[in-house]
Length: 411
Image (cartoon, rainbow, N blue to C red; front, side):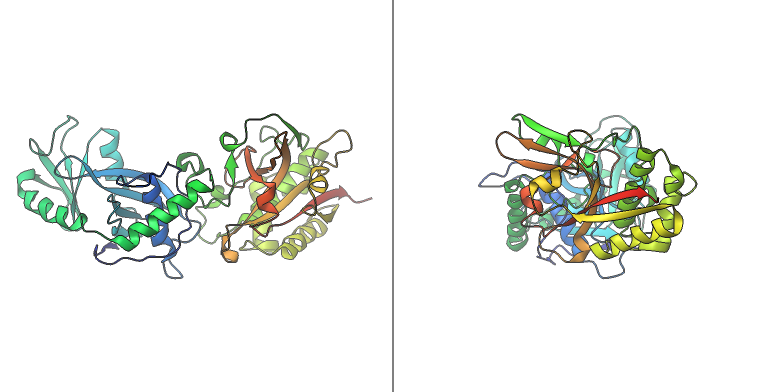
């Protein structure tokens, strides 16, 4: 189902979706990717229960749409797990112009982009795409009409000039309330120095996780679990299971699976996994021990303990790690008294409810000479251990839970 949304209807609410960081001037006139992603976040968070869009959705692609004057007037935005939105590219009226829960424009638009073809938005579920790969302006070529009612027709752009004129008047309307909401959100993102590169992080809700580029540049000391690199270990990630309809909000199971994968490598004993298969291990944990999450910390521990009891010849002990920085550090490192324990962290996205919690695995730390302290993590979304979260954030605004998991063979 594709829906055309009246640009006169605005939904103003607090936003929470990862957006890329751009500088914000005192007098904003340009619609940036910050505003694009913020507008998408508004729509996702306003979706009713049962929608395929939820707080785990993210932007999978963004394609510019042009107007009669050859300027960008909107964006086609693909949404994971499926569907799209058309966003008005006007800071004064940043509306969702239409949306669909199926991504039935993706193939057509991606093909056009691959051939360097501009796509023109006519409003009301209609688009124009030129018929060949040459670079024409809208005035001097015939175009393929793509839309809900007349798809596949070849027309002259003159036939739609009046429609463009009407659309231009509508798109330029001022929506002060939404502009203010978007501007406030963008300022918040930038003021908190949140690392939100959409093409490396795929727009996942951020949880104040940063990449190495956002770390301080001063010298530092560090610790890291022995051999925890993805080069050694067959970790799983959240997106490996996105094609399974019944698997949702499964960060708890991803975290436990990766905990087991690390200790299986550490002990060179793959009886910790199911048939030496990380994916099969994940499904056993998700189906039989943890289910949809993120679960609370006591349920996380109970699930891991039960798995080890029924499936392996190992046991586990737990302990807190967030009581002090020195307590956290002693769990990382293989030499000089390091305990070499992987930890789990249940982190929260600001002050939202439990649906905005996410499990990650702690694998190391950095402590800078200038005083900043960071925990190095496997974020569960991508197969790398090059993400970090500030110790001060973990112990203050996020209300984080966390502990070590010391998995050992039975006597």
